[in-house]
Structures are given as C-alpha cells and as structure tokens.
Image 1: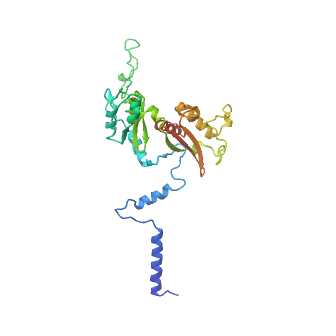
Image 2 (image 1 turned 45 degrees about the vertical axis):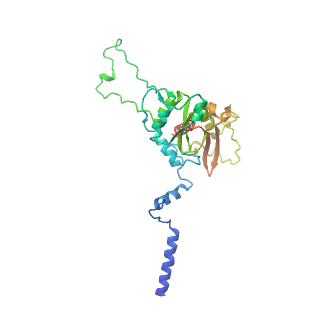
Length: 296
C-alpha cells in the first residue's frame, strides 16, 4: 500500500532532520574549527591514538597548563635546527637573547643571574670547535694512503651544531642553562633550573612486558627509589629496572633518591604503561633520547 503524498513528504523531512543532527557541524569561514579539525578531535580522543610503537620514538607529552603540545613542538623544532647564532667571541647573555627572540619567545631570569653575580651583559665563552689533528708528513712511507691523494671525494663536512647544542655549550661556560616553561625559553642559572622542574609523561608500553609487570593500581611492587632487592635483578620489575637505569645514568644527583628534586612515577592507564617524570628541561631531553634508543 503506498503512502499518500503528504505522508511521504513528512517522512522525508523527519529523516533529513535526523541526518543533520547526527553529522558534525560544518562551520562557516569565521569559525576556527573545520570539518577536518572535527575529525582530528575525535581521533585524539581515541584510546589508541598516538601510542608508542616498537622501533619508533617513544610518545611523550608535556604537562604544562600554559603550554600546548603544538607550542612545545614548535619550540623543539627550532632548537633542533642548525644554530643561527652569530659565532663571535665574548657574546653577552643579552645578545644571545636578542638573537633567539627573532625565532622564538625568550626570557632572561635576571634575578637568578644576579644571585650568581652575573648580569645580562656577562660575556659568554665562544664555543670550541675541534679540528682534526694534522697528519705529519715527516715520517712514514710517501705512498701512505691519504684522503687528499685519493680519487674519491673528500669526507663531507660535519653537520652544523643545532641551536640547542650551541646554547648548551655557550651557557654552560657560565653555569647557565635553558628551561622550556609556559611556551617560552627561559635562560636561568643551573641552580635555579634544578628548582624549575617540568612534568612530562612518557608512554613506555613497548618497553614493559605485561606478563612480568601486570597492572597494579595499588602500586605494590614499585620500589625504584628504594632499590630493594638490587642484588637480585630478578627481584626488580621491568618498571623498576627502567627507572633505575634513568636515575643512575642521567644526571644522578638530581633525583629524589639521592636528595634531589626530580621524581619518576610509573602509572598504568587502560593497559598502557606511562612514566610521569618531573625534572628540569635538559634532563627531560636526555630521558627522551634514552627511551628512544632503548625502543629501537
């Protein structure tokens, strides 16, 4: 039996209204979120989104309420690019900050510098570039195989220092370092940096065997800061051994078990294994590098 024309029109409108209500909204040009962004937001909320995988860099996220993941990624991309800083002798902290400010937001912790007897006009030692030792031609066989006598191309020049490496070399000469905090690069003293811990979460699931480290919501078995049973490697869980490796090899004096301010805590969330690390920026970068290597 066919429906009257009026009834079919009514059904059409009901179905159309239902379809519109179940689709993500298409926003106009003045809105900030597009259909593509809507899909991205749903992917970010998925349980398995951006998980660490064996053989790849360990996924990590900052826990800074005033710095987004995108802001941090932008800062790190610039810091890992070749250094644009002028190679000049006796460059001051102020001049370093001025050059940095052309590429990223930077702040000088003047109070910390004054406590160390420094100022923004303090001159930093220029970086030292090591040259290959000259090969003496006074001795040895004249037919010795030297690279400049070969028909093949000479060895390529070493890659330029990254901005991060350049900064570390220059600032370390005056006991200074950088901290990534609230979306900015802060130039401060090493002493104050040790008190400016940043919190970061590392998803270490590929490095933890679930059969030996079952989910323990009550935290039983975790003793990395106490090192119980250290004489018996089998007595330590994989979490414990991983944390022990980090604390004993990366800036050991900064960690809690030796009286420092830095901490590491393991946590399992929906079958994914995380390390929550609170430590200064430069140590965080070392933790990331170590975990990446271990996962390769």
